[in-house]
Length: 255
Image 1 (cartoon, rainbow, N blue to C red):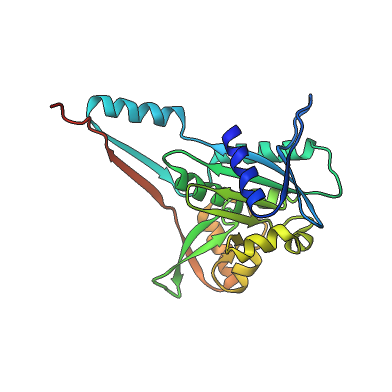
Image 2 (image 1 turned 90 degrees about the vertical axis):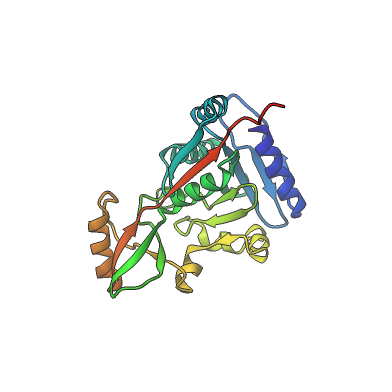
């Protein structure tokens, strides 16, 4: 976790922000206090590494000259949900200064960093890909809030910052109590200029994705698709994708 915190501190410092590490106390606190000329931001840094079970499976396959296989859903992840909820709790328990914005920094590390990045995005936004059935379309469409969404449940969190080995992205929470104020901040503008902002309102306005705008339990894909048909006039079907990993981990031949 200290490495993830150091990376977050260095990244934000390189972008021109003043970054302080929040002093540890007897209570739980956020990790970083970030400032610019007009705003301050409390940031809790979380990291998701490879699970011990995955590391052990790879090691056992390596030792037995077998092929390592893994199947992972490209959707909401309960473990990541727990990590983000814990970050929200730490931010809530941290004393605020000058109406600081509250952000979660999620560092996806390890062999499957890109997978964790996508799962964290799906967990925050309830993202699921859909295909149009009536009228039919050959192209899939990203849908926000199709699954349970932490963004909806955490209006006190202004954004989620996602980082993996190649990408960094500020995921805006359009349900934030202070969304319009956050969009005017230097942090938002800085990442927006770097094309590192995902703002649902903008993406929906540009017709790059759609959103489920109704109150309905997110348990039955069929019922959600029917409700979405009433909202959009299009009948969709959900596309539940998995990522399949196959790694040949045979030991090198001996001389």
